[in-house]
Length: 603
Ligand code: FES
Ligand code: MG
Image 1: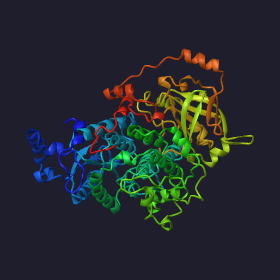
Image 2: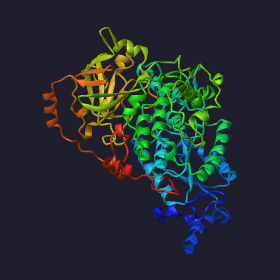
Image 3: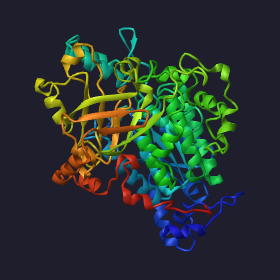
């Protein structure tokens, strides 16, 4: 079954001109022997020949839920409603497992597995009789992994999110996933709480089925999946346990069957303009600093020219509209009740910040989808109007400098205290000068951060390297380094930080992160030394080490590539193929495989 031959198709869905690729497995009259073989095994659990051989579209359900993936686990139950919708619309559901990804449980990091799950999905979609697919998403990396796979294969695909957990509370205060961990850590470091309280605080955020409740990477990426047009409007924010979640599953199941007959493929939805819309949405949402990486990766697999330049071009002028942690105070459930992604998109559209003409999974344009949204229903406590935002100019700023090509700074999390201390000096507004304290990765940071000999002060800039995609491997969420306990006790809760790793989307730390190229591949970050003077200038978007070029050159000559030890076969494969974070951290060779199943006249 050469995929190229699928162009020809075999049978035609009655009443339409589309050809289903699954017919090559189940209805190919030219090779009845093989057809019998393909059909017989799917009968063994009760499917009928009528279902397999009567031109019903076969709909894959890419199941990311499992006991190992608690953030997505309820998809195993919701899949029933997806199936109901598929069957009601005349399709046949075939559910299959995806390599599990769980953000907080996977060592050394779940980031390593995004590309593995991507590969797995491509192989399944390419090699089995699937006409269209529902991508179940939730936990951070599951969303980009599924969209990357759908982009490469380019068969009709729709995202079905699992939704956030219900809002959590600790002692009457909102307790958001991740954000509560950063708070608890600081209280624990300052000995204001004991360990039991620490665990109780953290656990208070984990209220129900669903993914992280904050605008961390999970809710951000599901919101961007909706913003880019790949899920039904309103899908992203419905909390996991709400009845609407099951109803959304049913509608998603029905819709994918129609999408197959319309041959509405990802390439018709995820266009350059759609990605730029997503950047505007990300800025207004205060979305995770992991979003640029993932969206660039999805775009590259889609064959769309979408780079950090688009983030710099679109993002910075967009205000923060959504008052969710970590940039604000509310959580996913309130965000949903407040209007969710459609309410945010309507604000952006009416402010002229979106291209409303882009196609979406509904078969209608973004602007048409938003016609149903009523502005007066938006809860202004949590979703602000465009002209009275939470913060002006809140998008992502792409920095460059004399030792790095790029690094990303999420403006929405720069708080007043930080701005006051570092960025408000008369005569040099938005310029921060400090002394580098350099850590060789996360272990080194944990071993030495409390060492008084490092002499860390409010004027220090904490630098971490060896934490990028090749170095870690997978790139670690470590750049939001906490100051030493003695500074926290003195009230200095945040220091400027910089590094070639990432940081959790739930972190409110104003770090310069995703620095590319990373140190272990010879990026200039490798040349920094503790004591080096650094200047961070937000006006010129530069981060420079203030030492002579000749000195930098000397250091470069003396630099030796570190030996990296792989612990698993995948780590070795990953390290040999992965690119830098500024390019999405993709398996570089994989980006040349595009539209690997070209069906039915896709242009
Ligand atoms: Fe899975 Fe946050 S850890 S969604
Ligand atoms: Mg994370």
